Length: 205
Image (cartoon, rainbow, N blue to C red; front, side, top):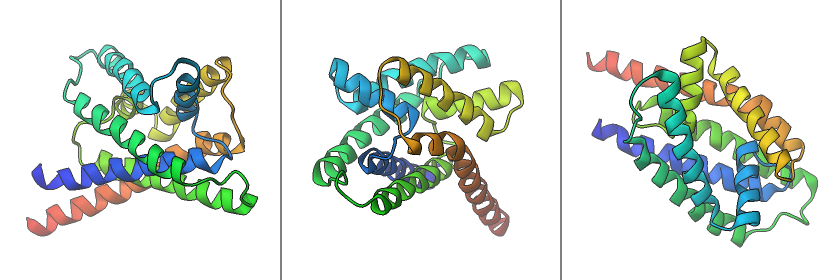
């Protein structure tokens, strides 16, 4: 378990960097990120703080849908994610500005961000250490209703699109790309990470 912690922490660090890059690309952020940014603008608090508040809600939802006790240990992950998001938002968003950049540059930054989120979430899920409640919700829906991770993620992202729209959040073409693609990207990297871990276990055996 201890050996998995660096992979776990690295996955979160990488995924949060991806979030910051996507937001800063200005071509359209992920649905939940748009919601968190909109809440920050309207009601204050940092984006990381809103992440933690909503993740607490997902934690309760997961316990209900799976009919088991809340995974309290996931609060460690929530805290780590919230702090890391605020860190990258301060370093990346405050330090760079792609508003006036050519569209091709914006899309390159966006696609790098999407890949980093998929890679980061994929590898941190493979460690089987406490998940972000949101990712736990994705897995819970998948297990409860026999759906793929891709479809589960699509349901959650679609829900966020509706909430963000109702609150007046700004969405772009990139938002649609994330909704349609991020689940598949996470699934791809998660399977790859699991194969690597399984091969190492077989080698040690």
